[in-house]
Length: 376
Image: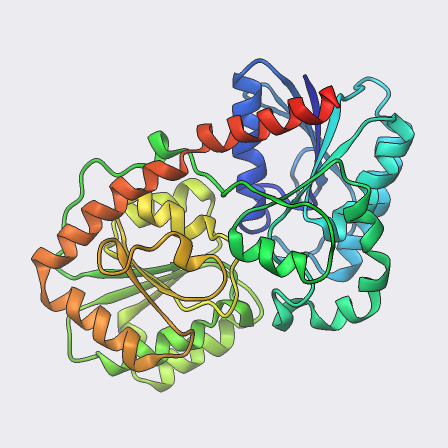
């Protein structure tokens, strides 16, 4: 099967959707399929690259930041991808188009589908669903939502990454929606040597944006300053300065490290040296970072936003709370920090639980769906 993948951000740039697109595509290549990814170019990344048999095309589309795509960059990608697929992709005639994010990438998939006369399948992550991530998308969905129904209705199949994402999408679009959870390369990421650290390490990884609620991390850890811990907040974004300033104002500068934006491989290395993943997000689809944290053997302390509860078994591999429940986070992190046996038990359970999200299972589920689409 020949599969054309459209996504506006792909490692090493962007957030969780990019690694999922990469890992799925690599699994399909391993299974003997031909896969071409069309994505955005940034910095000195090559315009074309072969990654273990995966053909990656990067198009110029005015992207100016590695950690996020502004409106100009997203429009630029849709324009460039539409042009490429309709006029410049003559050496690759796909059997199917797989597009990540109905918005902004759906229009390019819909146009390419008509031009190439092949079906397209949407994977909706969260930010492309009206109302699912209002702090990030409320303003522009106010203008574009009336134009989005055809993107969903013309798709041969629509996939959501969590039950939560599916429920939110059904509020706006009357189309059948399957659920295929995000996956990770479990065999590659799994921590086989889980050890507690003399100074317990609390870690976060992601964009420094309002959706991730990083100020809540600082607020919570300020309440347990009497305990032994260190926190590493991996990532970058428009809220980083505010978070650093809050840490300094709390007198905790010596207990936080901000290593900046890291490659996926570097993030996993840090996870393997950590103990607790703390993510008090306001919204989430099905967090890849959370699943990676599980495989790395981290105890999960997450908000109950979106798909987060779908990866946490309360009290076994972690805990969930309302996004701004300082008291709840305080109590559970304090419990983990003061009871080494409990922390180790939860970390071991977390690593074992991640096996259910192995990318091989996810990739096979997509292939079954693609075969059904092509057959029909």
